[in-house]
Length: 306
Image 1 (cartoon, rainbow, N blue to C red):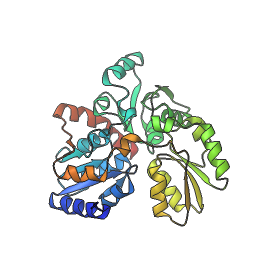
Image 2: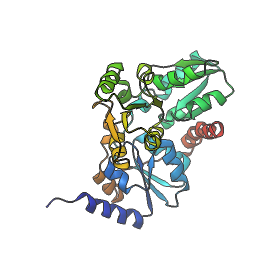
Image 3: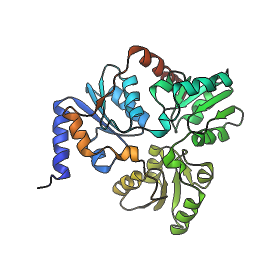
């Protein structure tokens, strides 16, 4: 006889309470995982929640850099990544050695790292940013010259809003968001002419230019929930369409493209969470030197981002 989802969720709830564990779920997780999480949201917001949560153990249902960020902000806690295969192509596309060489070419530039980077890359960065804080922080830091890593699309979005500063961008980014182009937007708008188009700044500039709203995952969800509009085209990972359909059943939500799927996020299942509570998953271990260096740009982000 097959096991029901609710049965698995009940077992997870029982185990997390018994083991003093906080479960974090990124917004791109499936609905059944979000339902058993203590907190859901963007990667940095989850890290902050973990820091103040009373539990001594944390399970991240997301990708590796997110679990690393939790560990950086809560070094006294034990942190697990629910599925060890869940990486992030954008975070991992440049290693420390490559960016170190690039830094030599642009001496004096402040290295601004998207939070979607590995702990190793953060050790050679000056400040981290999130998609929602990038413009504010890049405007606030004293340096005029900025080396923005790794996402060229988010970097372009920020650069266009701070013309008084000089940006050097690299050809990195999120392969999920970057695979969408203007033709996808045109097709979606033709299919849903009355819908507002909400988009993540990790998308290409020509896609972002057609948006009615540009913002982080949480920003997109908040806008859709509070808007007087009744129809929305969602220009980020397709799980957000599902979450909004549950939250706002009186409104209609459409994916920008059926291809807006992050396979690294989708690799984590409800059973992975259960298995992690039973000794599976991967514990994130970080030595003192790595932690001390990697947490500095995050501390700078808090300073400049308010």
